[in-house]
Image (cartoon, rainbow, N blue to C red; front, top):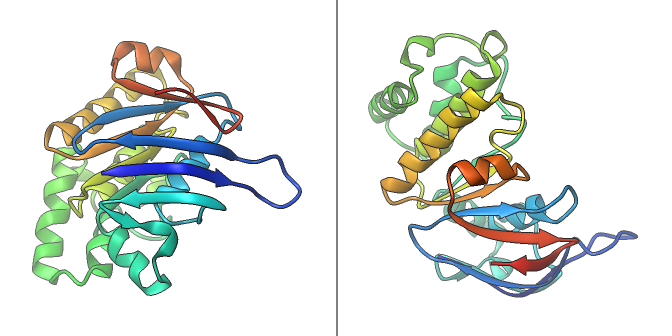
Length: 218
């Protein structure tokens, strides 16, 4: 599902973000990506999502070498990947419904199916009653659930979550983790980047640990 072979990522005038990284995440796995701030967790997710390209090495996602994809082919690959950002990245002037629906609209789904699928996923995350609200009027936990609904509405094969509970209290964190585990139970491969050891201990899964861009444990 996700394979990395001797991957390096460097930025100009900075220490390497990733160094000789090789690992494999199988279809249907739930994996934690952990390490201190600056370990390279977010960089790794960006490479998988084609937001950046590796400096050296190969990354295969669903058998495709993302480093060699033409710009026009990247959107197609991204349709199989849902992403949950730490800062939500919701559109504040758009309703909850539109924030989730935009994923399907961009993919060219019919408006009838957009409405049906958007309502269904918002119901699944417990926010169907909020579909006409605007993100600034929601709590942090509700905004994160909207972000997860947006990531899942396209039924992705892979879900990448970057510190999805970083700004939430323990109760809200457990709610978010329950949604991610539910997605995994439905067959989605889930990769959660987190530095929260308590979170990992509460819901133990495979842990991939990075320190200074290097793989320490997998």
